[in-house]
Image (cartoon, rainbow, N blue to C red; front, side):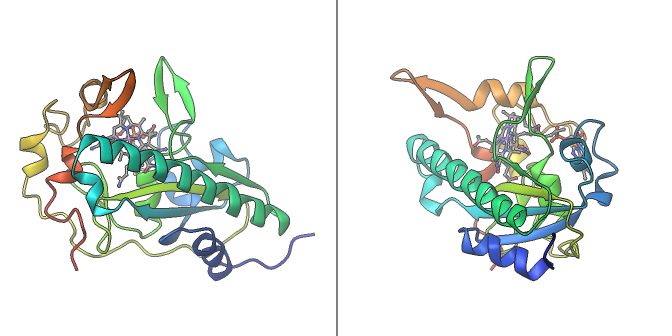
Amino acid sequence: MTSKLNSEIVKEYGIDAGASVVGIASSKDFNLAPKGFKPTDALKGCLSVIVFASPSPQEALNTSVEYTNSRKTMVEKMNGIAKNVAKRIKDDGYKTRAINGFGGKWVNGEQYGLISLKHAAELAGLGIIGRNYLLINPEYGSLLWFSAVLTDADLIPDKKDQHIVCDNCNKCVEMCPSKSLDNPALFGKKECGKTMLKIVNRKWVFECFLCRKVCPNRFGKS
Ligand code: B12
């Protein structure tokens, strides 16, 4: 037995669980996602993708240690939100699958998410993917972290954001130490992955987050 669920109720679930913003995308709009990375590949019959976002505090950008600690807190928070909302929607009688902020599956020795969360966030009206290849939100800038819930509930999707949040100033491209952003059509995943982490006192530390830090709109437009 399914109860009547709508976009407003689902967004309330997300805010109750601690998300700063929630957006909804239709799974039909993922036709440009590669095979194996569409919402329907992760959940048979998926109709809607509910995306949750919350920002790191601005101080996270001060040092590698602060950034690394904040990332850990945020990933746990976002995973908790997705799990919580997935359960509530399931209790309402719908199929769900929580999409964690990190992790998903390994393909040819490389780590992938089950879907691309920043593309999902863009389709859900939460901002625009900037030149730094990060989702930039008009209010929270590039400091948002994401998770999502896939469901077979048919929810009204949000409209794409219309703000100009990336001015193409190119600072991120110039400052990227691994040159991962040089080709606007092909992000240098391997190069970025090799540069961004280092081991300090036998712990992984995020050494590089310059694509976030140098963006003039990192804290949003307002
Ligand atoms: C693996 C991973 C990485 C890898 C590879 C990056 C990558 N794929 O872009 C590495 C280690 C390099 C990395 C680095 C970073 N990452 Co990362 N990463 C991920 C993770 C876990 C999976 C990405 C993935 O596999 N996507 C699926 C594949 C298929 O997508 P793709 O390769 O991006 O997509 C290409 C095509 O397949 C196609 N496509 C794919 N899906 C779709 C859908 C539609 C509709 C369209 C049109 C196209 C399309 O378009 C792309 C161009 O060809 C995501 C979480 C997630 N599930 O999205 C976080 C995530 C993307 N990372 C994030 C962050 C913050 C970072 C770093 C800043 C880390 C740091 N230093 O703190 C850097 C910045 C890199 C940058 N400037 O983009 C955030 C981004 C937040 C934001 N505001 O945008 C995410 C969303 C994590 C989160 N939970 O918030 N990351």
